[in-house]
Image 1: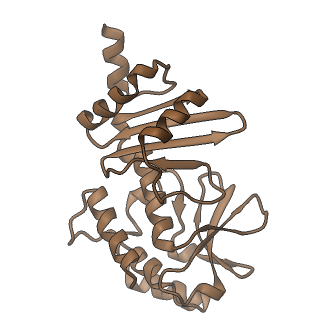
Image 2 (image 1 turned 90 degrees about the vertical axis):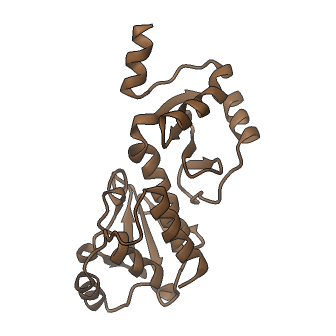
Length: 230
């Protein structure tokens, strides 16, 4: 197991408040049966992930880890993760399947595969941070369309993280486990998502952006009620 893989497991457990003895994985027989059916042993990082964390709800809150019984080989790729509308799928090349922590490739709408992440561990960490921002931190999330000056503000005040996938929209910023800042840039405009693990961290983050004075399109219910009561 690579250092990156071991670090990823520790970080995910900390991020989702999972203790070391808590097992949210598939049974070993489920993974073994999938490997027999596919004719390949899963890469070490992915195999360990299925066994320790694969059944946790965080894998299916937005985009989804494919269950062992539904893993499939498409051409020369093992597909193991899918976007919520199945527009994008992610895979490991069969040529790389014997590596402990191989690169991950993405395919959009049936187009050519392109390398999305240099390692499986980084891919999984990126996906889970994205899912956490939407659902695990759901009581403390703001989403809004922003102008270019706000994009410049984010890039000036927050460092880009390594958790950015080639060919997929979100860009991740910030250096704290209890905050999440994502930019979604598209032809139609740019969306900013801010999230905090606790109310106080969320309010601290919001205060940084308050001088920009722009309207949020989506906010937590408690915040909507508080604003209406003013």
